[in-house]
Structure formats: C-alpha cells, structure tokens
Length: 152
Image (tube, rainbow, N blue to C red; front, side, top):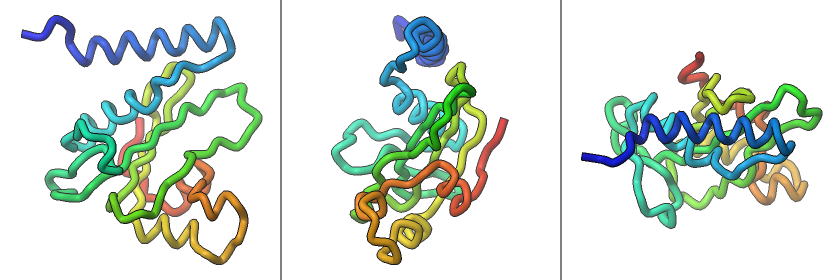
C-alpha cells in the first residue's frame, strides 16, 4: 500500500505551485511532471522512467507503440508574452508530441498532439532563424499544426 496517493500528491502540487506564484510572482519547476501525469492519465499512455530515452511515454490503444514526448505550459492570464514550448529535438527518439496547456491553477485546459512530420515541417529549413534551428516553437504555432485531442 502506498503511503501517499499520486492523485492526491498531484492535486497538492498544483495548489502549492499556484499559491507560490501568487505569493512570489515566480513559478516552481513542476509543470513538466504535472503534464506527464495528466497526459498519461487522460490519453491512457504508459509513462517511462528513463527520461534519457528522449520521450516520456509509450502509447496504448490508437497510439499503440508510439513514443510520445510530453510538453506542458501554464498560460497565465497576466502574461504579456507569447508563450513558447521550448526545444523539440527532431532526433528521431519520439513519434508524437503532446502539449498540455494549463490555467493559472495548473489545471489542464487543452491537449494538442502533433506528429514528428508536423514538427519537422514547422521547424524546417525554410527559415534560418535561431529559434527554428533549435526546434523552438510558440504555443500558437503548435496549436496550428497539432490536433486538439482533449479539452476541458
């Protein structure tokens, strides 16, 4: 028997992260773990423990055997910047990317999924900007190329 329920711990982590941001204006580095948990639970994926493999989960059902990279971003209401999802390395170690967007309380609002081909095309060589070279992408761009697979 587990000492703590993962569901309860994630709920408390969300509350703590939201309260911390309200109190300090800074964020805690927990979004990635919350994203992994929410995506795996919602889309019925098997999380992997070895994150050096370059992906976070293995698909089941319709996604059977697909290697899934999971990204998460909190979209704060008071933010004036255009949020980015950070680097997505096109190194062949994943098949699809799932992006989960959270509200100010770290609760999931939407999940988008894009294939490796979609990502490679979007970050391809048509632009020579540094962001394209690094595989960086805005949330808005990911939403344009991805498919909405879940929403609140």
